Structure formats: C-alpha cells, structure tokens
Length: 313
Image 1 (tube, one colour):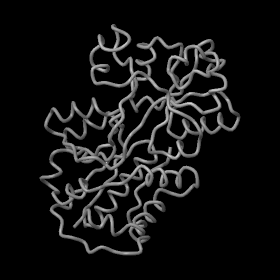
Image 2 (spheres, one colour; image 1 turned 135 degrees about the horizontal axis):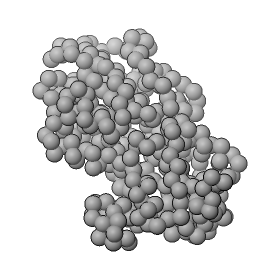
Image 3 (tube, one colour; image 1 turned 90 degrees about the horizontal axis):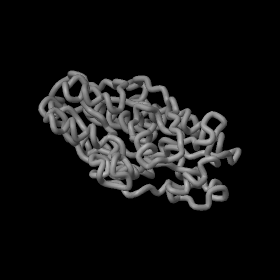
Image 4 (tube, helix red, strand yellow; image 1 turned 45 degrees about the horizontal axis):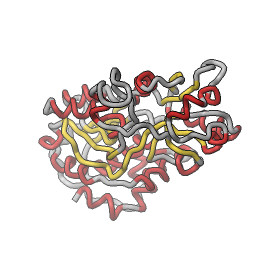
C-alpha cells in the first residue's frame, strides 16, 4: 500500500505554472477521501491539488471504501473520487436513495475487477478461461494450506466484491484467502509470476498489472442485477452472486451539500476526467518505478495545465 501524507505546499511549489486563485465560496475544508490503493490516491490528489489551485481549502481523509458512505451521508466527508461500478454499486445506490449523496458523474475510467490468472496456467488447466475449468483444476491452484481446494487470492476484505459468496453459490472447490493490502496482493502476483507458480487472484483495471503480465480474466456467467439480488436467477436457484462481477464506469460521488456550499468546486469535480491508460501509467510510476505520489501528481499537473485549468474556469 502506498502511504499517503498531505503535501500541498511542496506540490504547489513543484508546479511550473501557476493559476490565479479564484474567489471561493467558503474556506471551510473540502474533505476528500483516500483509500488503500495507489490509483485512488493519485486520482484524489490530482482533484485536491486542482481545487487548491482554485483557492479552495482541501483536506485528505483516510477512509474505508464502503464504510465511507456513512460519512458522506452525514456530511462529515464530502467527496469520494472513485466508486467502482464493479464493487460499489449497491452501497452507492443505497446512499443515493437517502438523498444525502449524489452522483458527480463518471471519472473517465472504466472498471474491470475479476478473477485473473497468468497465461502459463493454461498449460496445467487447458479449459481456461471458462470458470468451470477451475473445479477440474482445483488441485493445480491449491497450496499446502488449502489442498485439495484451490486457492483464490482476493483483495482486502474492505473492497467488497462478493467473492466468498460467489464461490459458495457456484459450488467451487476453492478457498478464498484475502490479501491484507493492495501491495501484498501484487507482491504475491510478482513472486508467483517469476516462478511460474500456480495463482488465480483479484486483478483490477485501470492498473499496470494487465500491461505487465500476460494473462486473462476468468469468464464467469454474465453479471446481471437480478443475479446479485434474486437467488432464483442464475445457475443456483438458491443463492445470489452466482455470476461474474459487473463492469462499468468508475464514478465520483459527493455529499449533497457540496454543490450548495462550494458550487465552483462541485463543477470542477464533475469536470474531472482521466483515462484508463493515463491512470495505469501514473500508478506504474509509483508502484514499479518507486516515484512518490507527490512527484507523479506534480509532473502530471505541470504537463497537463491546459486540461485541468478548464475544470476550474
């Protein structure tokens, strides 16, 4: 996991160009949430530093991905820059229904989060990427701790995703083991890949991993909202989540009071837009090249003033 610390003064100093500070509606801090994966911290920091360029006071608050909605509903937290359609839809819809949280539009990134395996595993399990092949090859994916069950390395428990429920609903001969952190997840992938050791794990995109490693996502039965909400729908008539994960936009959401208290900031947040390719490159600079989030965001802002300056006009 990339450690996040506030560094606004250093970042602003690093920018090669300055933007005239606009008169803002309130100097109370806008609280942007940060989580436990590098891309989200980068996304949030770009937005926060752009808002600072416009004269707003910004505070970064570490928060749990799903539990943050409690703070967004009360206004104790203000903006979440990445809610993934793949894992956050249910929590997002529940929060919208209260009237206290609003959708600020897509981030420009499209989310994929699913089980993934390295291409070399197809030699041991030729039925891949069909999910049903996993049961036939469970022993090939097992570890001494899980044998004879296969081992699936999931993301941190706080990410959601219903992997435990999926394994049970599809009667898969697999045990779900959750990585403690984002960094631990990809460190284990790197280790396994170098040794061509058996592994199937949670991979998400945008991320550098899908470009660095040769592999494929498992093809589960297609996702539908009914599959998640109605046990009678899908292969198992007695269980929900008997299908793959959804795909779709990564959304920005906010406490409904943001538009009233900081309307200019709300417009800027709605305007934020970045692509999967750009974000994957930025994450790779931090995770693979060892650059700091501060340096990566500063370089991006210096090179892209023509883009982000339009967000705060």
